[in-house]
Amino acid sequence: MRANRLLAATVLSSLALAGLTACGPDSGTGKSTAPAAPAASASKPAAAGGSLESLPVDEIFKRAQAVGSKVTAVKLAFTLKADDGTMSGEVAEDGTGNCAGTVTLAGQGKVELLRKGTTVWLKPDATFLNSVAPGKGAALSGKYLSAQADAVRAKELTAFCDLGLQTLKNIGVEEDGSATPMTGTKAGTKQVGDTKAVIITDKDGGTSAELAIAAEGQPYLLSLVTTGTDEGNMTFSDFDKPVTVTAPPASQVVDGSAYLKG
Picture (cartoon, rainbow, N blue to C red):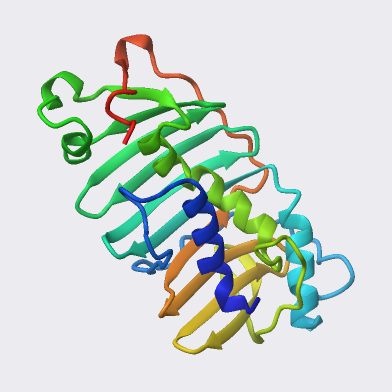
């Protein structure tokens, strides 16, 4: 797998498995419409085994995947473009099912989402509420819609709650789980937030990619941006920072199963 296929493949596999159809991308493509958000600083000791920027590209990817596979929590900021519009958002997620953040769907509104284990609470704005519960806006405005995580609409949105950790775990790994040599060109370094990062670029056909991997501390993937045929933007921060989710007060919760079943 070439570096520039990583984002498209990861987004495709994770969102397709989640059944993202009604409000998600059919093609798995994405588009960066905003600059990468600053990622949290890694600790400052040099990466184990010497300077990361002096290593071959494949070794850099191996190190990034090794640490990424052990990350227990991360904050993901993303912008993705589908055939039916642009999706963007920011979610903090961990490997136990906790997730909190917001997702905006172009033309379909914005949703605040919480997930704790298998329970999901969605707080939609008026635009999104009208799409899932036409005519119920007055009764449901300002409320959280509760559902199990496998409800169709809840599953579509909470797919983003797993995307960050999946990407960190799968960098340099084929879709069938096998490791494969990664190609690309080192393009120097730059600051991502306050962390020095090694930049790797690659191009295949009409798609170009830029990956930033922390050159200080642990070699975390800090950002992944593709442009051209397959476009997308994901940035990563708050590595291993605990994610705490508190259920909304019962007075603010409405059973949303009838509205979120798809």
